[in-house]
Length: 366
View 1 (cartoon, one colour):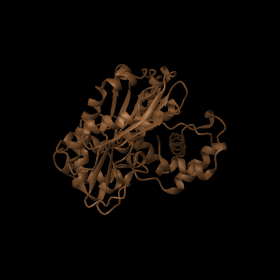
View 2 (view 1 turned 90 degrees about the vertical axis):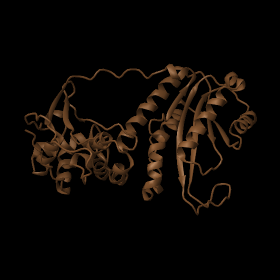
View 3 (view 1 turned 120 degrees about the vertical axis):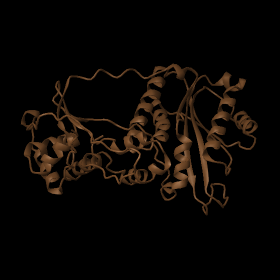
View 4 (view 1 turned 135 degrees about the vertical axis):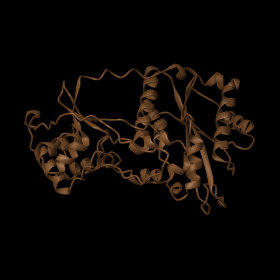
């Protein structure tokens, strides 16, 4: 028999202040009271995934999406009308809801572990994809640190075509460019990443053009391994391939970390804020990027994969995070301290001001 778990109450501000003050007084891990309750078996109540219901984030989800509630609220409202797949909607709604407080048995450190929806429109899951992409680029560039690299940005001339058509044209044009002998002679490998910007009608373009209608503006940002490439040839070749666009920008890569940040920041970039007032355009954006790779390796990078993560140390489930929130809100001393420790993590308390501690707490766990 399925049983619906009651939603734990949100933490009052006094509980936060009390937990932070107690956490700052600890001198060692031995002084930290441990909060333990019997493990709970997760059971989901039966529901109709195809029926639209009003969704309210659980307290653990409120903590998870701290700072990006507006973006999540927008997709919760409009995703049922954008994507007919009920499973994607269900995963997005439940992202981070059933989290467990877990303890590393080797170090005694508490952390949260739970399921994620892994969708690009999810602001938290998108950051995880961003970090993984950054690790991949950084690992490859450090393994070939003696090679020179350049940033190259390709854009298309303004067109009123659908975003899907423009993205397909941009990617195909770049594929044709890589087939040119001069490119193959100068560039051996690299990464390309898509960026999509949106401009409303009535604004001015950088060249002084007045936008009479809403416009999509897709870019292709490339980190290419090359000692030298003729920029004038690059402009000419891009114009020949696209037929109407010669806007190409080139810059020198300063460091591997700079390049990794350059590539990954576009993967973690949220949709333009103007889309939140236009559900139709947001739907176009969603479907245009669906099943499309944002990070596109070419050359030797296609066979490179980041090193495997180290095996997880032995861990033990302590309790459901919702149970910890309930206990802390009800004044349980050990639950308050454990909650504060989870959120603040391993930040050295004596070295930061109290207002900074409060900011870390409000920001939520990573």
